[in-house]
Image 1 (spheres, rainbow, N blue to C red):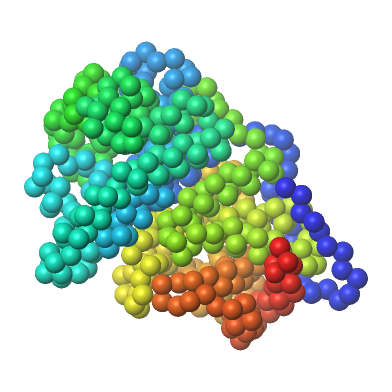
Image 2: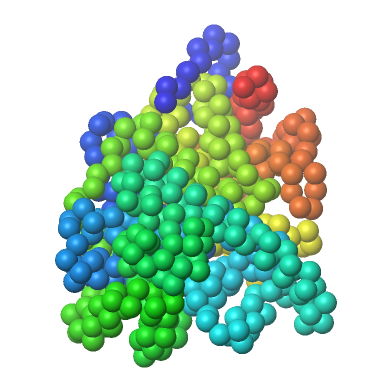
Length: 472
């Protein structure tokens, strides 16, 4: 990506000194793919409602099963990355389905991970999340209509999930085997799964291993070790490959295996388990493609944010072009804009799509998402230098923002730019409780808080930048 830096002969729009983000390198070095996906797997965990580091524990178990099965280094690497990215398509599909029936998607994912087999268990599980917060009578009235809708939409939903997961793997440059495995994550060993109804060995070995390891972790963390073992036995031949179940049960009886699985520091050393040490280049274009891919995973969760991350990144760069920021700084703004809301994967879809005023508990979810953004980006190593810039997009100059209540000089200029870009894009887009605002109205509102909550000079630069945004 080459940014067209403007050459302004008139007055500078911004008089404050611009700081370049020097800690980001534009060199052609490479870093371990496992480090990058360790961080993003934490973001995907947010969508599942499970104990943190679910994907990391799943990857640990999966790689151990693969070793016991005598898989080659390349095959074990495929298993490793399939485990990391198994849920990458979830926000694109299941969330939309759950929104359709008014369910809490985070709680819904958690129940789905348990893969209930009996009709009673499925009904009980569904009623926990269905029409979340609504009276039982209303649930019973709506149930026949919503079941009809869900049954017609679910097959397509599963295919969307698998297609998006495969696409993410392709954009990351992972092997075709990983791509195929991610397209098969909703298949069942007995042949009744989706999207292709594959059976037994027709299903990728990586998919079959990950199915065993992720179900094990779900039951160990939500229920108990003993129940996890029993569920594996019960699901053998139907959901799971019985031979792989036997391997997993054997591992679950080994102390060294359990010590590694339950190690509180597992996230620090899990990246070393990639048998092939897959690398990712840190050149500008590749990093932007990775950032935009995960930004899209976030945005696709709701139709109201379908292009929000891209919009924030685009606006932030346009603001930075006004005084002629150097390309490193513009690049950092672009990355931060694409990734600023990755922590929102942990916010139930019922919250951003709610028409009424948010409750105190709902606001707690909202206020927590920048904390998760920062945690995820730091864990990637690659994007750690822009973690604060991305996470501080809801902070305000007067200290009334969240989550830290930073103010004034505590907020570097790049952080203020991302904050302004975020407000601009959010006000410009449709929301469930209002129509999209005209650009003139948006700028009028932002002018009203410039100097108090938003940086006055950045808002002035935004006004200048909107001319080029309109022309873009």
